[in-house]
Length: 191
Image 1 (tube, rainbow, N blue to C red):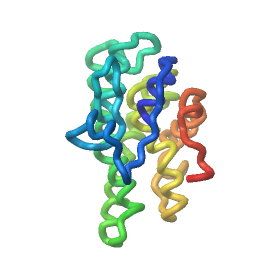
Image 2 (tube, rainbow, N blue to C red; image 1 turned 120 degrees about the vertical axis):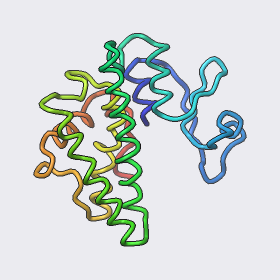
Image 3 (cartoon, one colour; image 1 turned 180 degrees about the vertical axis):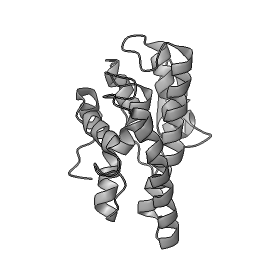
């Protein structure tokens, strides 16, 4: 999803191939023999793996509509917070839903809950993490904005609410309604 968002944001024409993860194709195994997982971005017959790495690559190759800030310190911070989201929130939130063990679920809910205040503080009063337009942190955070509300609904959890995290909640609403994000998200109903 992050890769599609980056490509759509930059208005890059691409071919999307759906992958059956239960029966991985030879093409996937050829292009990502190390992790054997999606996404894989192939550009000029050269494969690149891992969502955040791919998004940064796209930003380096296609200069229009920059995703990363031009100033080095701000760029480093964008990378830091994107990795933070990936490491501390996305994984724990998924485990909170799909873990059968109740103690493990509680641990993952706690981990997610402890990470969200850092983002609440970082967004400040900005529309998006980078200001008025989406950037790397927002693209990484689409999992929070799109999936966490569904996880809450499915699992009966309260992770991201307007009462607990008003700034982050407002950001999540802005993000999922951004035209590029909206066109890149899967339809919610079948999920």
